[in-house]
Length: 606
Image (cartoon, rainbow, N blue to C red; front, side):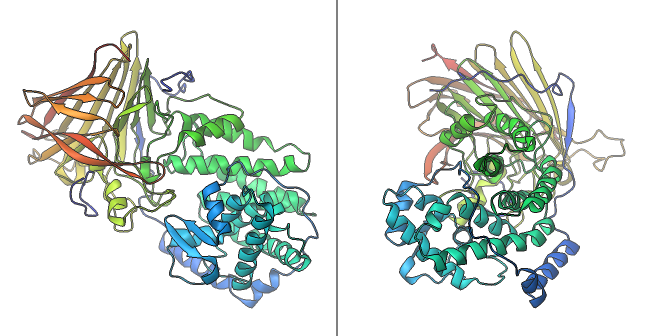
C-alpha cells in the first residue's frame, strides 16, 4: 500500500456448490441508476443539539425519578443467544484478564469508569459482552463467580446515568446479554446480588423506553427496540412494552433492510449483526412457549440470502465498506438458524452488490454508491471494485476492513483500508473516488452509479459507471466485467471519459486536463505473480497450484505499464497478510483512456 492521507487513494473448496437463488426481478438488461441519498453528512447541527439536550435530561433528577419502579422477582424465560462465546477468551476471563479488540485489562485492577482503555473495549465492557464467553466456560461455578465479580463492580460504578455506559445501543445490548445468559449472571445464589441485577435490568428498560425512540435511525436503534421487545416478553407485566417495541421495529427495519435484502449501510458486518440480533430477539417469545411475530422471519428471509450472496468460494464475505471480513462459520450459523437456509441472492438494484458465478469462479462487485454517513461512519471509497475466487481460493480481493475485528489494527492501516487504491478498481490521480474525512466518514464524491446486467449462453456481463471524479477532474469511470459460461475467463474493460460533451450545460464545458491513473488488482493470500516477457501480463499461481494468465493492454490513452507491487489483506481475525498486487498505470489522452484486460485459466480446472 502507498502513502496514506485522508484524501489520497492509498493502496493498499466450496466452489458454487450451493445453488444461487434467482436474481431479483428488478434486475434486467436495461440500465438502472443508483443515487446516493444525499446524506453524505452525519447528524445535523439540530440533531446533535437534540442529542445533547437529551443527555442532560437523562442525567437530571427528573429522569432519575422516572426510572423508579418495581423490579421483577424472576424472569419468565431465557432466550437462546445465536452467537457462541470464545472458549479462549472464557479461559482468560476466568484468569481475571478482560480481553477485547486487542486490549487487555486485569480484573483485579479494573476501574470501570476509567476513560483510558480504547473506546471499543469500553463499549464491550458496558454491553456486558463478556457474559457470552463466560456462558461456555467448562467450569460453571468459576464462570458464575467471575460474572458476579465483574457485574458487581460495574453496577457499583454506574448506578445512575452515564453518557457512554447508558448509551441506548449499549443499554440494549446489556439487557439482551443479561436475559440470554441469566443462568450465569444470576446463578450464584446471592439474593442481594440477584436483586441488584434484576432491579438494574428493569431500570435500564425504563431508561430505554425513553431513550430508544430518540436514537438515530441505524443499528443502534435496532438494538434498543430489540432489547425492549425481549424485556417485554421476559419481564412480568411487559406486554405494553413489547407491543411498543414491535411497532418501533416495524417502522425501523424497512429503513435498514432494503427491498432486495441489502443493508442500507452497505456494510456486510452490519447485516450480520442485525441478523444475529433478530435471531436473538425472536428467541424471547419462543422461550415462553410463544411464536415470534412474522416481522422477524420476514426480515431475515430477505437479509440472510443477500448477505450470503456476497461470499466467495472460501465462504467468506469480503471487507466491504469498513466491515471486517466475515468468516464462513458465521454464515453457516445463519444458514442453520434462518428459514431460508442456504439460499443466496445474486444481487439487487437496491443493495448495489452483484454476483457473477460459473463453475468454480465467483465474482462479487460493488456497483452501488457509497453509504450515507448517517448510516455508516466507516464507509470505503471503493466504488466498482470487485473480488474473485477460484474454488475455495481468493484470486483477486480488496485489502479488507477494520470494523468488528477481534483485535485492532494500526490506525494508519485502518485509514488506508478505506481508500480507493486499497480496492481492486481504477484510481485517478492517486485520489479517492469519494472523499474521506479525517474522522473516517465519507464526504462528497460518487453520487450516482449506472448499472446494467445481461446474461446468455456465452456468459454473464455487468456494466457500471460512477461519477466520483466528475467534479474534481471532469471525468467519468466505466467498468465492464464479463464472466465466461465455463468460468475459465474474466474479461474486463475500464474506461475513462469526459463527464459531459462540449457545448452542454454540464459543469465541464472544456476538455478535461489529462490525468494519470492506476488500475489495481490486489491478489488473494498466497497467490504469487510472475511477470511475462512483454511486461503487460503476469502468471498468477494459487496456493493449490492453479494458474491464471493476466493480460492488459491500452486501447486508448497514452499506453500502460504493468507493475507487481506489495499489498496487504486483513482477514477476519485481524491478521495482516502480505500479498501482491498488479498495477496497470497510464494517463488519459484528450481526457480519455481505455484499458482492456483479462484473467484466463491456464490448463484444466483443478
